[in-house]
Length: 94
Length: 468
Image 1 (spheres, rainbow over the protein chains, first blue to last red):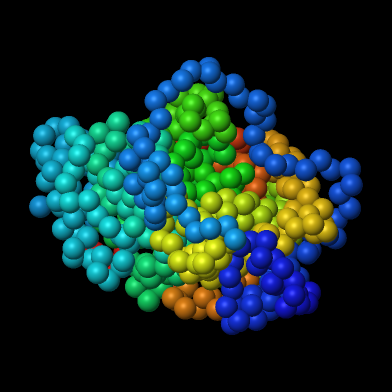
Image 2 (cartoon, one colour):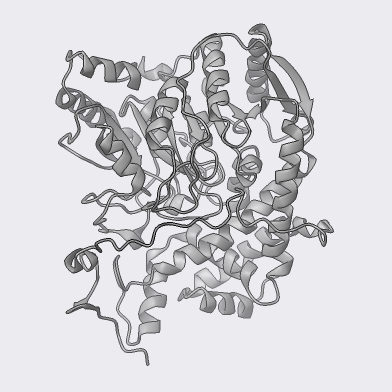
């Protein structure tokens, strides 16, 4: 299956990856080969088969709605690249 | 002198309980073994110098969050990340008195079959350091075989506990989906991920499973165990019925030496009184791999969306928020996670969802039905765990599809949510061969009884020949 450069760039944008030129080329070829292998699933006519999203027969699991203590804010921010008071600081969106 | 190479977890616990050895002396003995042999093997990403528990040590795969101990999942994007809380499994092993000995190497985000995808370099197989220990949990498996830890925990999505145990010659259990909490464990593919034990004996694996298993209010995908975990005893397999899938005979990927060790194990089972019959899993071996490599990357692409440089991990600067996120992710993820994120994003994207992800989920339903039918009238399905013995480091690193094929025999039962136990069943070319036993959902006790009886008959020496 051929994956075009534009398709790679489109998927990379959806996946939030700023790929280098080398990566765009390499991933295009590799994805094509992998998609060829996994496309085998399309051989089957499965219109009447329900999809499985989870292998256990669990239905809704309910827990008591009891308030519990949260992590202290200093813990929450302990691994943050940049903190601004009680907020995570990030660059401007535009 | 404590011989960590031969000591089982059960024996280590009894040494401590009889006060023949203190928890601190035992911890120091393993750190000594690590100092001696881990320079060559690279099983541990970091070790903990002081024991904090009253019992024996344990190694934890680096996807398991440990409060105050760096947890990277083998990825640069989590470099320096120090959890501020314990995962449920870490909390449970600590509550049982176990001390965290260290964090073990893994393919990045548990994506791989050799540990070569770790951002921190591969681990080596203690039977032959020029070969891989399997993956993704190669660090834990190699550590247990090399006497660097009495036991450990791994995580298994498509074979990451069973396959490394097979390649390193020890016992690994992928439990029934939903029996062990994933709270605080770095997620790969949530409809498949399971945590499970690795040890030298089936009894050790059963004991560790009893410590970690059971419903956790913090993970709503967990279920109560229908029965208490029983440590296996006895050496008879009278009345036990094992099924070999017909397709195994035609799988060219299985090496002759692996096949020979597998056949010999079946003969041992017959001698112990088991009946060996045949089952049919045609769809599992034809569509299992393609199904898995759609479902798992799709879920991974969603799970790995959280690594955005905002709340944890290193950040690459950018003029805008979007630039910062895109560059942080490109710099932080290695080639395999990028490949799977791209594949999964593609399979979930508009216009392709039904043909790829949706279709794979329907195939999964067929595989579940096929396994249910295959187990009808049998206690377990038996196959080799891995089609090959440990391969040379570098052999498959450049070919993603060759690497994916390592999981041919472990993937189908993972998709079906079934428990699988790998026990060593012999050597081929001087390297361990694993036997995979797959049971019904929540059928762990049955697998333990079977595995325990077989391991006694097989009498495999878990200490690598070059270390004896």
